[in-house]
Image (cartoon, rainbow, N blue to C red; front, side, top):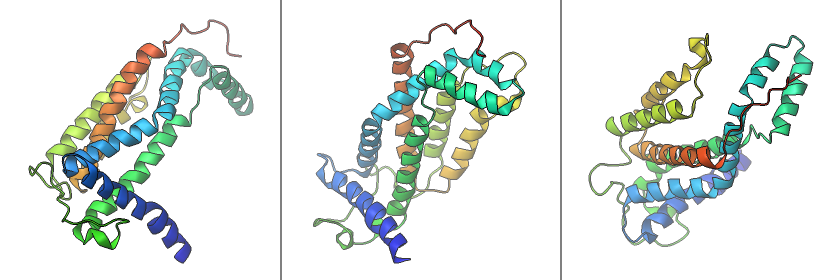
Length: 235
């Protein structure tokens, strides 16, 4: 039990708590909203090499979609998997890059929730690695409290998530089922419902990350040009 407490509290929670606190006290303008925006951008910049790998893989995935569709119709599961892996490897497609970026952000968001849920409401010097001489203001320029819930920031975040999914999801093929594209509509609704229950800081963090992803996609669209699919059989 002490081991898991050490992993969660000493290796994860407390460093994130101090990262938020350090960013807050060192920014030229002490504002928690700017702190969240800065941290969201910082994480995306740190993960930029992995994000670019994922974006490049996504663009190349579009170019081999006809071949993947043809492989999916093969009856032999073992041969289908082997040929699919070979095709992805030949086209330098890394299916884990995007997942890694998502996992890291989810972990950070979970810890950020704990920071705003309880950590910032107590004396920061109890957990800080340095001395904090004044209370922490959790408002965004005094307009609204990032440690409290609101409805409009989750709504904006969900709307931008829908815009991002609509932009990045390939056009469905003729005859495609509704289940093939259901997440474009359903996921933003689910995210909106979840964010309604959480501190507004999480909505702001996710919104900045989504906007970064949209910008990254637009850049990758021109950097990683999709070549016409190879006409040869995938088999």
